[in-house]
Length: 258
Image (cartoon, rainbow, N blue to C red; front, side):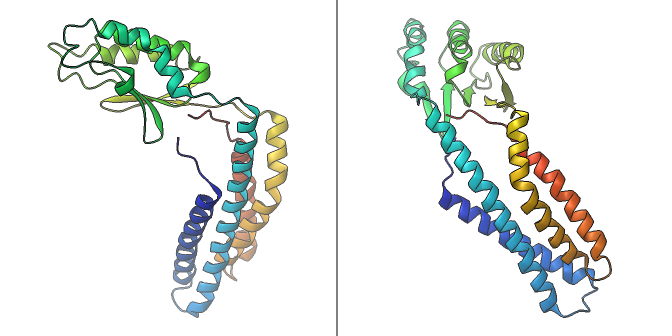
């Protein structure tokens, strides 16, 4: 998984702020029938853009701090090297396959990090080897976070594809118990950790931290967007939206990552 740094957070916050500024300006201007001074709509847009930027920075910064603290508490393990070592018996099995000279399966080439995601490629394995490799992944779930398993589409099989159905069936039986979400594509399956639910104490702590800024900021933003004819309704809607959003953000799951 790609690591997000504070610099990235600044860029993301700025982009979201510009998007909010543009959309809010257009909404404010069109809601008046394009009769009012355009600068009033721009002022509303700037206010909403600043609110979005500020809230994104606040919540994103908090999440970066939580992730950093969590990372310091756990011992870092080189998952890639560990998985290669665990899969060495599968490599030994693969060397005995009749196509091994032309299409060898090796941990050095078939187990890697691709675009930030730990990847296990089952190409060039028979169904027995693929099952053994999958069993290794399942048995070592505690050290494995997000992982992509390349199954292929079975185009090179003499008959119907056997490896992908085996992988899908096996994972469907254990995914829930192992806290994995299955994301299937045509030639691969990604296992994404669902993450641990926050305790009520942690949820309440997050809620208390964010409820004030989020509720006030959204109440003022929607008040501006509603215009003079419905300022009270806009303020109430924004406050309600702030409470709901804070509740959802406070429920953020801690996800294991590679």
